Amino acid sequence: MRGLRSVVLGLCGLLLAGCAAPAPQAVNDPYEPFNREALKRNAKIDKYIVIPAVEAYFSLVPEDGRRGVHNFLGNLALPTIFVNDMLQGEVSRAGKSMWRLTVNSTMGLGGFLDPASKMGIPGHREDFGQTLAVWGVGEGPYLILPLLGPGNPRDVAGLAVDAVIDPTNQIRFKQHIWWSAGREFFTLLDLKGQTYQTVQGIQRSSVDYYSSLRSLYRQMRNEQIRNGRKSGEDLPDF
Amino acid sequence: MQLSMPLMRRALFAFAILAAAPLLTVSPAAAAQNVAEAFVDDNIHKGLDILKDKKLNTVQRRDQFETLLLGLVDVRRIALFTLGQYRRTAPPEDVEAFVGAFKNYATAAYQSYFAKYTNKNLKVIGSTQRNPTDFIVQTQLVDPGSSQQPAEVDFRVRTDAGKPVLVDVAYQGIWLSLEERDQFVAFLGQNNGNVRTLISHLSELAVNLGKPTQ
Image (cartoon, rainbow over all chains, first blue to last red; front, side, top):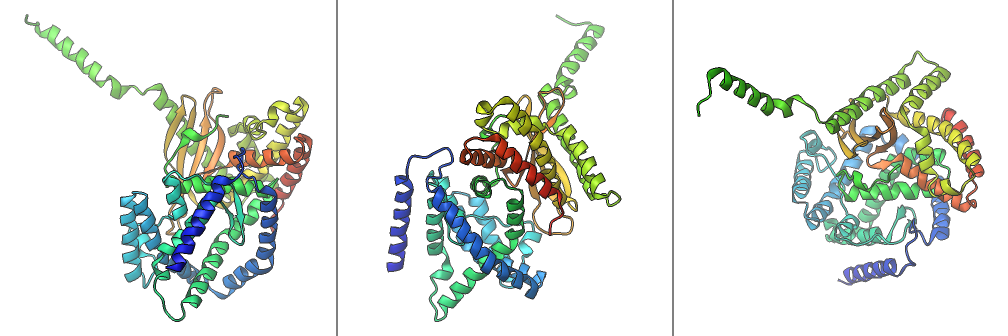
C-alpha cells in the first residue's frame, strides 16, 4: 500500500512538474542543456556497458533463443497492454491482447513461442503513457532519461503506473527482487539488441543526433498513440 | 400518354447510359490518386531493383540510383522545406548552395536507407488525398522469410508540377523530411543561422554515408 501511495504521489509530482515547466517552445525542450548532457552520459553507458553486454548476448545466445526471450517478455507485458487497451476504450484490441495471452501462454509454451501471430493475432504495444495521451494529458517537456533515453513526464508517469498494473509485481515471493531485476535486465538487453544498429545508423547520418532523436521519438510516440491510424491532415505543407 | 416503341427504346437507352455513367467514368481526383499509386509502385521497384542488382559495381549502382532518384524526387522542394524559417533569412546564394549540398546528402541517405530493404517486397495497399495535388500512398514492406508483421511505408506524392514527384517518405509513421527539418533547424539555431556551416556538415556526411559501414 505504501508502495502504491509513493507511486501515485510520484505520478502527481511528475505531472505537476510537467505543468509547471516553462512555457512551451516550438520544440518544447526547456531542459535541452541538461538533456544533452544526459544523452552523452547514456552514450558512455551504452559504449562501455550496454553494447558489450548486447554483443555478448548475441554471441552466446542463438537467434532462436533471443527470439524466445523476446516473445516471453512480450507475453509478460500482455496483461498491462490489455488493461491499457480497456482504459482507452479499445475493446477489440483488448480482445486480441487477451487472445494472444491465452494462446501464447498455452500453445506457445509459456510465451516463448508466438503461435498467435501465425493465427492472425499480431501483437501491438500499449502503455499508460499512451492512455494518458488518449485521455488528453499533454506530454510535458522533452526529457532524456537515464539508460532509457528519450521521454517526457507523461511517459515517466506511464511507466510508474504500468509497474503497478503489472500482475507479476503483485505476486510476492521470496526471490521477487531477482525476478524483477532479471526481467528488467533482459528487457533492456532485448530492446537495445533490436535497436542499436538502427541507432548507429541514425548517429551516422545525423547533422545533430540529439535533435534527430527528439524528432524521431516524438513522431514514433504520436504514431503509437494513434495506433497506426493514418492522419495526413497534421502534416505540414511543402 | 403512351410512347411509341422506337421512342420508348430510345428513352430506355438514354436512361441506361445515364445510370451507367458513374461506373464508366473515373473522377479526376480518383484518376490522380491512381496516378500517384502507379508512380510509387513502378518507381520504387525500379529503385530496389538497382540496389539489389549484383552485376553493378558500387559506382554504377550509386550513379544509376542517383539518376532515378533525381527524376522522381523534388529535391529542391524538400531542401527548402528542411531549412524551416531560415529559408527566409539566409542569403539567396547560401540557399542555392544548400540545395546542391542537400541533393548529394539526400542521394547518399536515401541509398543507405533503401539498401536495407532490398530483400523485401513492397506492396501498394492504397492512398489518401490531402488536397487535389497532395497524396499519401500507403505501402507494406513484407519480409518473405519472416513471420513478422509487414512494416508500413508511406510515400508522399505531389502532382502539382504537371507530373508526380516524391516529396517525403515515412517508415512506421516517421516522416524523413520532418526529421531532417527538425535537426537542420536545431543545428542552425545553435550556429547563429549560418547555412554555410550546415552545408559543410552535410557535405562531410554525404561522403561518409557513401563509404561502406564497418
